Image (cartoon, rainbow, N blue to C red):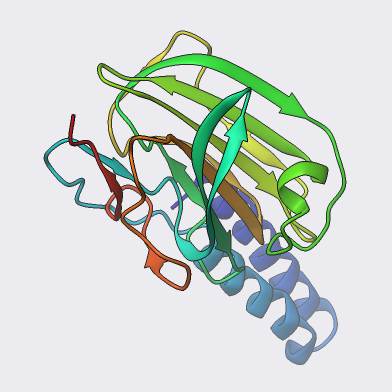
Length: 203
């Protein structure tokens, strides 16, 4: 369980108990239901990280776009993952390596599944340099997501599948791979952060 969920859930449970005690038990029900949802939303299950030379999904969700693109002048593959409010929102490192770049960009809060959200929405861009390749991923806010959390710092080393942050409520994560590392997923696939292989390193 993410600490935020415990704090929010406890607060709502207290408000529900307060309303039920001073007014009527029925008044506490909406607070208790919302508390139950937040505790569910902020769940943080353990994941089995695969072995081998692979790139894993940094987030749970549905693959909504796979395409060739350009990132900072370099041809790349982009994999876009949409997280609904029912998905786990803890983000994990797609690659073992060192964080070489962190860049936060304020922006809009468009629906996260829309392609333009990758450019226009509030986002945090992270670049991890591994032993054999460099991978970039973006934490992108959605219409409900109003806070992006990233718990690592520039220069930190991360392990494959390690927890690195979260995006609160519906959101999107884009992953950028070198053009010589083709994606192992297609549009429509469901992926799990830290355990689903989205690319295999074959060089």
